[in-house]
Image (tube, rainbow, N blue to C red; front, side):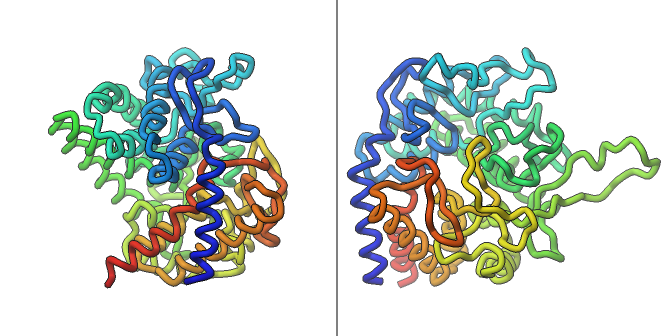
Length: 411
């Protein structure tokens, strides 16, 4: 554990010295304090980026609560009539052509922008736990309720599962089960798992606001969605959770009703997110870990965890942006989420090994280049993409403390 503690000390020191570059004051279109990824993304407020950055810095900066609240106020400032919220807001007007400021009603059903990912209520609860500001929660709660309603009204399909409109704002840009597919056709594992956690957070916010009926309603929706994920997205043959094709039951060429699910069989990091959301049955988690995560021909790497199984035909490690590459490279946010899933299900030795591998990769980057990068090659541990990227890379600083915390609980 001593070597691991040395790695943790090095990454923690780097975080304390460098992460203030992600703490931004109001500027341009962003009227409140916010968190950005720095580097090439300076002056940009992204949904899950800011959430995971806030989560990572929660115990690092005493005033992080102000930035969490500021992020939410900025998002709510641009909430649209239909309840949707932009997934990214640019401070600079010169880049506003990339800002999806319209709503679906104005643009029509061919609009390919997703609304903000279901993480805003989770961010709000993070801020509430930090500041205990019930008045702030009451201020934004109605818009967060409308945001959930927007997802339900526009993106909820068969079995009560949610679909991405497209890859625009889905987060994992070139996920092969989403990228290039028709609009509203992919029910995604990560989207539905994040929605489970979001509904749970909405119930907690409802409690803060004294909305007892809302609390009950959100908890019921959470349980129903978790059940649908396990019933329809789990493949018992492959032992993995897959995205589903939502066009199959709307076909026009056959006379027999299609009453079966059609999985989009790409083994990606998103297969494991039900473990992060704590909704996978133990026997499902065991298969995910033993058959896939620990398999060096699939997700296991000496440098972190791959975002796509190595033996998938579409596996590639090329460094690209817009779309960013999630078809193999190691991202810190995905490795952390899978690490957290291991911790949730008691796989502590495996979690420790993941931690050692990832921290080793990051510390070597710091020692060689003096910066961190956006993502890493799983075959070499090297990277040249977006040097100076901060943001959710700070999640690496949470891993050793969470291992220690779990160990203390078991003693």
